[in-house]
Amino acid sequence: MNVFTHAFCFALAILFALPGMGQTAEPPEPLILGDRRDAPPPNILLLLADDLGYEALGCYGGKDFNTPHLDRLATQGMRFSRAYTSPVCTPSRMSLYTGAYVSRHGYFDVLPVHLGTKKAVDFRRRWTTYPQLLRNAGYLTSVTGKWQLATLEFHPEHCRDAGFDSWCVWQIWRQGAKTTRYWKPCFNHDGRVREDIADRFGPDVLADYVIDQMRTAAQAKRPFYIHHNMLLPHWPIIQTPDDKAESKPASLSGMIAYMDKLCGRILDEVDRLGIAENTMVIFMGDNGTDSKTPRTTTAGEVRGGKTDLNDAGTHIPLICRQPGSIEAGAVADDLIDMADWFPTLCELAGVEVPADLPLDGVSFASRLDGGQPSPRRWVTGGIHGTVSVYDGQWRVTTGSSGILDARHLPRETILETAPDGSADNISRLRAAAASISK
Image 1: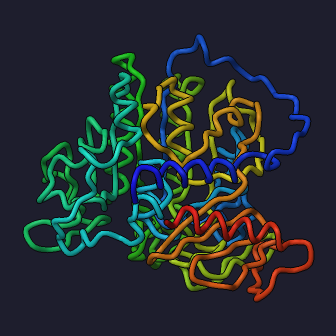
Image 2: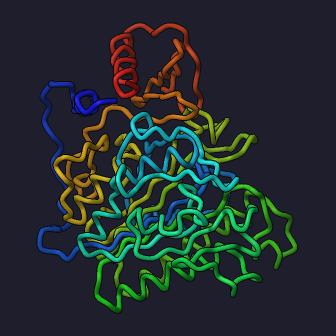
């Protein structure tokens, strides 16, 4: 794709994102909670669950799992009811880091780091990330958990290349074999494999690291960005420490409950350090739940999940908290795309995005500050070379004439023809899907 095509696709994407497609409307009165102009740069703590759809949390109407800490977080901050991404980890996380749709960054599938590939995402010359920009602006940056964008044995500085000063990540491949992430974890901490954690549970080690990083930054009086790639509740299904203590079998329920518990522990430390009012806490998933069993919600059953290019595979939880800046208990129905985080976090941090950097993401920083909703009109995702575009009612995919009717979620119905009155909207979605797929 040449530079002109990039620019054209980006301009067309923004056109479709603009509210009302040229129509005028009275904007809602903004709710002013705080003024960031004279405030110090906020700390940013991202808690990213691995394979967790929206329906897993009680605050989203989920009935199958126990998530009291995250449900409480939703009462303290803003819960987004329509946040979307790609249905598997690598395309989702690449859109997060780069602000690009999967059709533009091109990583539609998981890199084979589990097999020791020498392939790596080029963060030195090809892709700019927002952690790089935050680090350049003075943020202390760190990352944890699954690092699936390069095999560290062959690319030992890859986390640093992506914008992180420090890291404690699962080294998936070591000495010609795949390693483990939960019990007997193999973690690379700032370039060295840790030899002191063989008897520990991996997610506990990572929670300790996150807390240590927050304490270090607070003592240094430096703003931090911590990207906590939580390992839980990704397969394999294993016994957590609580399961073992209570002689319970391994289960997805137990893994989600333990993930929630660790989030509670980290959030308690934010409060204990006295940094809550200047710390943007973000909790979200990277794609849908990895389960063949339907999940129960107050709105009905959610069928499908990870790898499915539908609501179950792409609809993720998203909760943001910053007391005094974000309205407690608010629920926002804005459409949020994973690519939107790049411009949003840069705006919140007061970090300028280079003018020559094309982004597909649309900032929703104003919404977090109690102002205007996001202008985005559709979200997108991709897997196996296929792209979908979804506007909150209809979903279309490249290479298919079918239409997913999502007006009555969690139920989705496949239609062959556009219902009365919807043809124009669906045609615009197809045009958008074609434009971003070139």
